[in-house]
Length: 164
Length: 419
Image: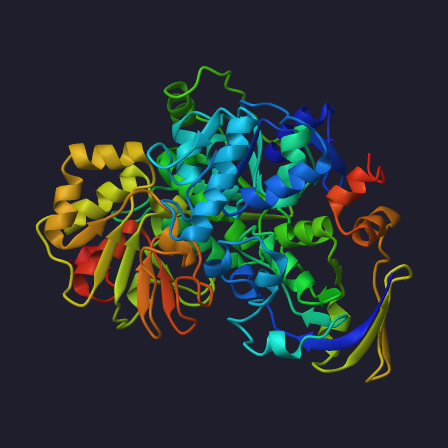
């Protein structure tokens, strides 16, 4: 699985309330959720995000509520991959389950800066910062996780018989 | 292989003699829970799987509590979707307006969770039921959908942190202060992916309601679950509500813990978490002069009868400060009724508070108490993130019911001992 895009970077403890505020949880429409993504932490996010962009963040990304609307909003906004130092556990599970690629890599999350161009090859566990020329190693995605993400989520993987 | 309490429950539900931290297992579920925010997403996913029925009509549970009674048309559509689904699939435990309560107060009250159970819920505070000796954890809507279809969920077996409690809490100090103290100590990711296991003689000095509050906020330290050993109080609580067998697990004496903390309950003071993280704690003597605009007493964390009663005893014969809106939300219909019958609602109204039907409303900035720019609230809720209760420049200070009630009277964050 290969990803390429410009980086939009945030700090530690980005919670699901700022990813998608509860006042918008009266809908589960993906594009509507995406239109409010990150608005309480970065009101320009929806203007600057482009399809394929990569979100980079610090520790405990996605902490707080179990709302699956959070990874859905990020994915529907066009973000292809989230790189963080660590993820909160419910968010981690939800992201994989809905087919949003996420990877823990503290070194990359520390060094990569906002606006950098980044490529990631998660079959081989390599993150490459094109702007700084630095390369980072991470755990490659196991095959079943790759399948969940390329299928667009766990349910579709079950339906296609890729997960039994 | 020695096991923790959590690991023993997971092993029993995976059909295994033992499990160890890091192992991936598939477990059978005793209950699958969702609310009016997370269930609609789960229902859409469930419908894609292609199974006709839910795995067990008695075990799937939906509670309309977040934006119910419906706050707007969109919320009404979401609740209707849950209502129609539960009717079509013959789901027994569907709780709508008039019968519902805040889910994590309602399920223990109705006897729907007992010790030894494995419960998943599409709500992060599902970890509350560890207070009854169950393994319970929050998941997302997709996991809820798969759980409704198959009755199973996969887990990575967690390692654990042990908290050995001794001593006894002082006056006006409760479970909320204990968990805020712990989160202040270990941080909002201090127990990330792990179990928090509470043991020691101090546990018997905590009421079931203190324990429910403590386990409720385990997620606020990043934990997968929080759990107490079953004791006489647990057995008494469950027996009054359920005929099911009470299964109790204790950790093996040589079980491996990542860390062990010893906490003397008698040394814990009333504690307040400042914006914008639950780990930003200060004891009540360190808070300084923080003027407030609103007080919220309720939520899945502190909406139990004991919580409402404690607030009422402080507010009795006193008045809420003129510039403060005080909102009291009993967590279930049963608690509300008892509050009416025992005169607590009269005390609140005479003091200048409003008393609401059960709802999660203000806790997550949904409705029933939204803050304007720059406003401050003391709340007995569980999160104080940016914009959690309203405008992004508003502030939430997390505290116990006693501190919240005292603050409503004083018009600033206050120590109940000084009222």
